[in-house]
Length: 214
Image (cartoon, rainbow, N blue to C red; front, side, top):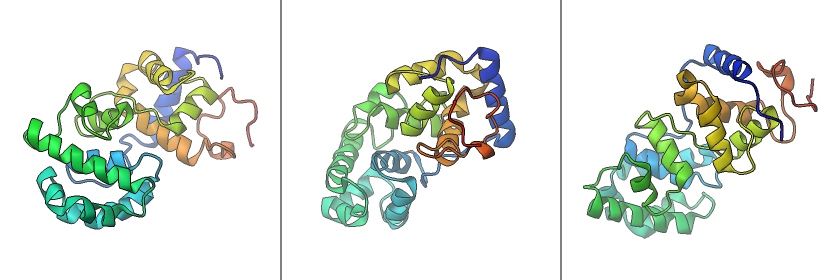
């Protein structure tokens, strides 16, 4: 674990991220808050590309909780059977849809606690929905951000909660809204787990990682 990067260095890191991609976007396809929540819940231990492939036809016929309930467990399972843990995920989506109808008037709630009360929605999923749909500066820490935060010292921490707090505590406010997207994309395509592509890294001169692949 690298030591915490200094404020001015972090500010320069995110200035470069912003310059390269001012409006980074999540890669999960969705049409509304409900389909976003379902897609993020399905993406646990699965790739965004795999989820997008499975939901391409699904969301054409089931883009609301009511339509998902009409499709039913068997119908949903058939659509998402290519995704890891699909049986449990299908059960969660049906339970989530029923709860949304019963407790939230069929609408996705905009508080973290309410979101986390939904079956299959943990803190990371709630943070993604709050960030992408409701434009809150929440930080959804996945394996890419956890690795990148510790490798670079941008947001070191022993667990995902600690890394989340480190981002909130140390990244300048003007970059908070898009911070997790910049970090995810950088971790996914440049600062990879086994073979980071340091030659293509726009922050390599600021990064203390000793095993650079230059």
